[in-house]
Length: 139
Image (cartoon, rainbow, N blue to C red; front, side, top):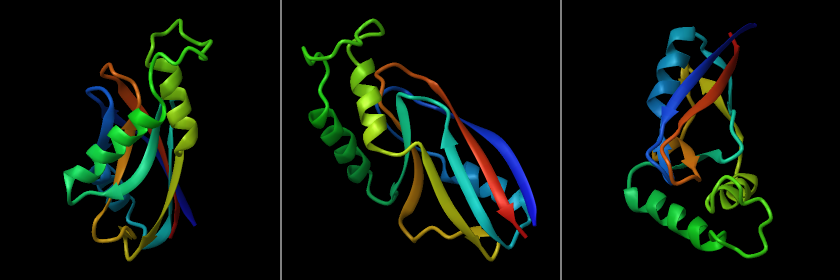
């Protein structure tokens, strides 16, 4: 068994989903493992990870809009407001989604479905540089 780790930087431009499947695929290819498991972990509390359809951009737009309606800014019940009106909603959206994903590696490639892509789901309004820790184990 071999293992490898890296950090992948994903720039965001505010709320939305940002695909970085290609970055993960390139890194997996460099490891030259035929079989294994990739774990991705976002190192932030106001953004998350998801695997979603990458063929129709309306899917990710609808997801972003729906989460905006689900957890709205300026809720008078929020106590944590020092970092702006979008911060506490971002923490809640992150808690409702995933901070870690696992993807099998088969025949040297990510075993994603035809229309699946890996995304950082940015929950803050401002641009950020998000760090995703990646770990692969396999042979």
